[in-house]
Image 1 (cartoon, helix red, strand yellow):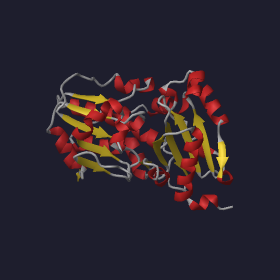
Image 2: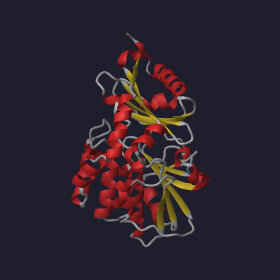
Image 3: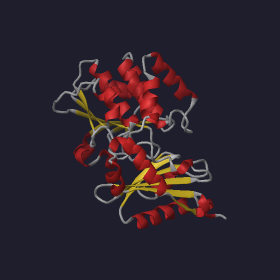
Image 4: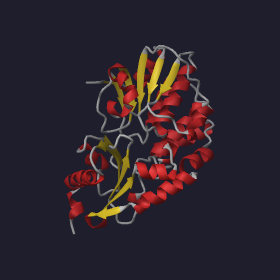
Length: 322
């Protein structure tokens, strides 16, 4: 069982250790990366040796973060994880750190404890909001680089401030980060507007795969390895696809099945107010937030769809009402 700590205690812990590695989750998004690189830079202002580790290749669109924060080589003495709700989400190459995580900072209500000490606040729309508080508690002045990182985390996990996890505090923090130098316009365009031609091609194929169930209240979209190869899409092109099924009028539960190289499927569930995505994925060994959650399943596409449908019917029985 993890020992719960406050923002102030987390700040105290981090300022008294050195040779720190910060772990992110696999299939990295703006929140895990923004949180990690902001914290890394903040700790480096104390002269500490700190670097960020990620199982997957970090997409090029985050280069403004990765290029601005040095990543020295050293033998780690302290391991911190950010935005990691379950040790399984670290990815295969980082599993060796599972039993060595001293501190985890996270905002997932479905968090499965694996660390020695945990700073958790599920009311925060992004882990980056917690990291902002920790950096402030350390007495570090947020510079433009940290502001860019933190703003990225907040903006991406709130869907550019559109999702239900957006609160007055979210806007206040974003405003403070803009005042500290965050380039909101450039970040928002890079995260939400710009699409490569490969991404457009992949999105077109994915939309054609959508199938409706439960009288149109659930919609399933598939992304296969064949689609990825045919479109020429890379990891950078995958972000932002999972909300598409849920955006269709009348859909309560939108599900994206992404086939991985090993044949398993990464499941992303998005819901509106009629359903709880974390409850659905919790039945499948995953978790997340009430409006966005995920898990990984094995089997054929047909078997996986049937498994997810069963979980949807169990978690949201009203969806089958005619």
